[in-house]
Each structure stands twice: as C-alpha cells, then as structure tokens.
Image (cartoon, rainbow, N blue to C red; front, side, top):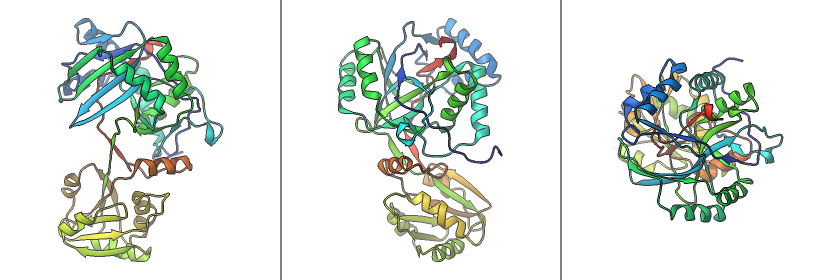
Length: 374
C-alpha cells in the first residue's frame, strides 16, 4: 500500500479506560516557550536524556505518585477542562457497538509509522491526544468535587494560557470515574495520526507500556471545545470552473460582492473567491452529511479544470492571502456541528481530511508521559 493512501485507523474496543500515570511536567516558565520544543527535536533517541538533564536543572518535574489529572486551561477567553490519563489501546473492536474511540478522518500510514518510531526513540508520549464526549452527569459530579479542592498547580504560561491541575489519586474517586467511563464513546478531536501511532506501538510491543497512550478527554456538555472550519485553496481552479461544476451537480451558484458573500456563509452555503470575484455556492445538505463532504464528494470531482493541488488554512485571512485570479480560488467553509460529526462516524463513515478544527488546544509540556514508567 502506498504511504500516500488515506486509510481508516483501527478502532479501539471498549470499555473506555483512562488509567493513572506519573506525569512529567515542564516548569511553568518553560510551558509555551518556543525554545522548549527543541527538547523534543532530533535526534529523538536523545530526548529522554535531554529531559533528564532538564529535570536535574529544575526545568522538569516528575510526579512521584501516579494519578489521573483534571487539567483546566484558559486561552483567548475559552476555558476547557479535560481528564488526562493513559488510554487503554490494547483491545480492538470486533463489532461497531464495541468501539470506544471514534476517528472522524483517515490517516496516512507512513506518517503514523514515523510518529510511532519517534515516540519509541524518545520513550515518550510528548502530549495527550484530544478526545471529546458528552459525559454522563454522574461523572461531571465527581469532577466537580475534585474542582472544589485547591489545585496542585495553578500558573499562566509563556503564551498566556492559564493552567490549573488537580491530581486524582483517591481509590474511591478513581473507581467512580472508571465506572462512569466504561460505557462511554469518545470522538478524536485532535491527534488522529498520534492515535494511529499508539496502535502501531501496541501491536509491535504488546503487554507493556505501549498498551496505553496519553489522552485528554473533554466533556462537550461541560466545557465545550470550539469547533471551527478549515478553509480550502484550490490551485489551478477558477471562479468559472466552480460555476460550471456547481451547475453540473445541481448546486446553486450566484456571483456577488465580497460583503454579501461572507454574510451568506452558512451550513448550506460555501463562499468562493479569487480575491477579485466572489461567489456563493448553495448546497442541499442532508441531515447525515456536512458541507465539507459535499465539496469533496461532488463539487471538486465535477470541476472541468484543476485543482492541481489543495491547501488548507485555519483562518479566512490566511486563505485569502494565497489566491489571485491567476493562481486559484479560496473556498471558505462553514464549521460543522459536533453532533453531526458524531452521527457520521457512528454510521461508520469518515469526513474528508482536515474537516474540523477543535480549539483551543493546550500548550505543549503541561503533561507528558514517559514510556519508562510503564
């Protein structure tokens, strides 16, 4: 199989389990500092030794007792709380109803292999993958009790994220959390390739520390992550190409002003522009699909020319900076709904690559997991 082919990662089987671990934590002054990323750079086999040096210099600490961690972070006015622990990836789901973790996009096998090799050389999970679910009320009640205590850590990092962390070690609380998580299903919000890397490491080294991977589980009912759109740039495509394709597949198209086009953007309308001309593509989106699927499954294949390549941008400004009438068009996308995404993946379908942008994400270095700790 070509490494450029997109495939569905395997499904982890339930019950959903998050287990305590010995957290490594960068010192607050190092969290969010761009220079800290160099500690995780090549050669990867030296990363564990580098972090040990940082520990001896006071730049890194290791929690002497294992715990689950309730991590709250606030960025750009949005506060997120998630439960951080070791996700059990040792079981594969035999049936759809057995799935504990739901990916919503495919992965490139070569990229997942590279990440697995890197983690093995580093002997680390450098950061948790991000999972979301709509948690049960009883689990929220347990975590609310945890929040009533004084956090073990409370600081603002170098990029102005505030972090509060509570360690959960009480056996009774851990048992309650385990009971409430057992029947849950979580969606991967960020980290599809790292999730696939966890599964590759587990397959290569079963029965040890690679049976687990670091994860943060966020309750969308409690502190929802913001789900934004990722916009597209179609290189080698023109506004007239988009108009022709829309007509060929029964979509509406109207050329208009920039102000009217941006105002029209919504769940069933896309905006296309070459920074000179602006148009609105009107879709009929079924309740079990999203606009980004309609774009990739219907509109792009119908284009008479192009695209020669496809680029992705998280902001409208970045997308617009990349287009001219000679270069191509930007397609401004609406944000999908979390419940719509969940419905699609539970029906055993995936979204196109880079269909979602869950924000904000925590800074690197808050909670790290060493494979040496098992």
